[in-house]
Length: 194
Image 1 (spheres, rainbow, N blue to C red):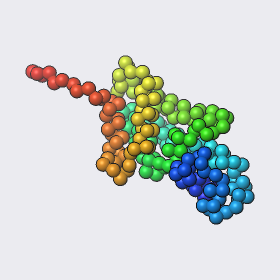
Image 2: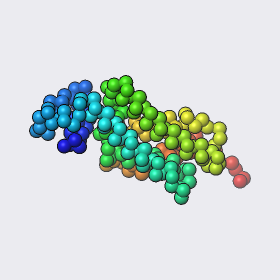
Image 3: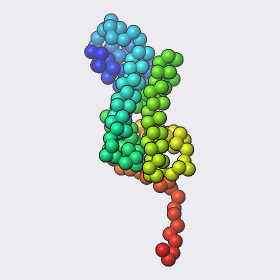
Image 4: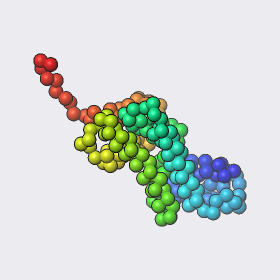
């Protein structure tokens, strides 16, 4: 029942927003009583916190597997991390939108907890970039922190416009984003005679 409450809350929070969704809305959708809700959660706030934690902890676990994969180059790890984020649009798009849109409704102690996990996710990107600098896969002239924030901005906003049944697949979009990061958008002139 706890998972059913979470799933129905995700649907309602995504559709109506956290603030506009009531506990009564949630229990009505499940055809249960408020007592059932309060058996599993003390408040709607706890539901929102759990949605955040389950989403980001799942990402962190998969990200760690990518980081530990010794068969991948740092460029491949960068791509895999970008793809990881984008692939969740199809399977967890509602959760991702809630995580990015509804953070402002969490209590301060919950916000601190979530922000620490988000920071861990960003710092893992920085590890890949720094490792790539050491292996000369990436330029030493780039600021690791700014690039990591730029990546997160590009991919996280994709939840609002990208559709997995659209013109590009999530893998194609991940390749496109990776290429922008690695090569930029500047046209490199061809030198004659070479």
